[in-house]
Image (cartoon, rainbow, N blue to C red; front, side, top):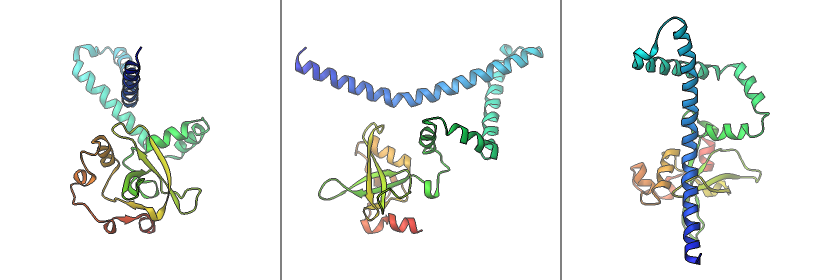
Length: 218
């Protein structure tokens, strides 16, 4: 194999792996939903069969019934999450290695995140002699280094990878109107769309962007 063919093969494998890593989370979620649906389907089918009702004759109504039960189950679980018993279960699961990390990752996508756990889109002093990089703060807890906070800079166009930096608060500016989804669009566009394009706003001077220190005080 020539060096050119070898380089082409390595590049192809790298692209394939990127596609795989992008696809896996979605496939996992779909598989979980299908598994839960099948379990509910089996239980409801058994119950209806016991009372002499044949769901195969009413396929559409059967589908609606399973969806309704599925949503009702999620509603019950959603209420259960806020109870003391749920906290006990969670403490038990937290003893399982890796559970806390997985829980934190999924909580990033919760729309209820606010206050000290809100995901912030921030600008930090860049790698060049001038300029800034746009990244994310998944937590506003102070780092082990005093007055420093953890900022994540994701890769583009596939934002599965990235880099963590401990940045002094004086070098962090919060883009308050930007959200996690806005930052994702920014990464996927590979710079074709600027953050101002995505937010549909005019570019701002640095003085118009909230410093992290001021944001924390408020």
